[in-house]
Image (cartoon, rainbow, N blue to C red; front, side, top):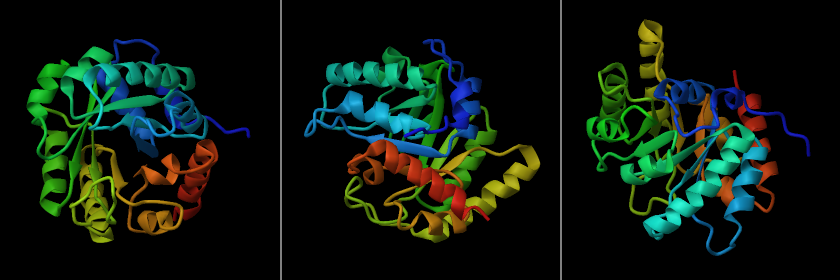
Length: 246
């Protein structure tokens, strides 16, 4: 299958010296963000991430709390190779030390993880930083952080639907997407805005609802990780995003 390259492709240099501004530029163009575990059950991590990038995924984050640091670094080296080959972005979750050692261009934190200012200090400006948000107050705080000295690079809104990847976390529903779209729109009118992604239970069956609520970027997990053909699944999600645009 011939798949057109993502608009984010031209923004990613193939070096370890990834400057924050370049990461932010790639994030502005990104629409499809994938979180995956180490795929120990299938043993196909390298082939899987390559196929996902080939299908049009803009960013892949390795998120697997069950693996040790050494294994994570080994997998991130494979992820980096695939990302550079396809001209895409890749991300580390939670561990700033792993992000620094691996040279990750994107680093993601949750509300109870390393504080943004501390993460920025440890990463020394060498990675774009994203933050999870689960309420209107947290969306407002993320937008304020994007405009502040710590310069948050992106944020995520969710989980929209209950998902086994975040057990015990209540779904926030589409109303929070509508709130984020309105709030981010107001900021964009004043200072250019910050990219944000909807996350949590998004798949081919509900992506249209997510776009109608105001999102233009999505994070997915099972919609691609459980697909028999990851490249085709990614391509069809991008097509659905395009089709749902007003």
